[in-house]
Image (cartoon, rainbow, N blue to C red):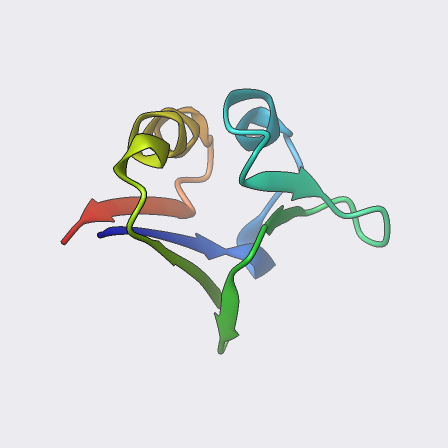
Length: 76
């Protein structure tokens, strides 16, 4: 399982995650911050759990490109 987590409240709106993993991230028109699509929000941590291992590489690229390091990607 691939687990992707976004700390949305710390997002600076740089858009790198959307450029690298557009199928999983988009920018909010309300506040200009990143949104992790199909995720659950728990106290500011937005988490997506997927059995599709093909999402790992692009989400990992987005995590590495994030200048404030608020995206984590794990294989479980």
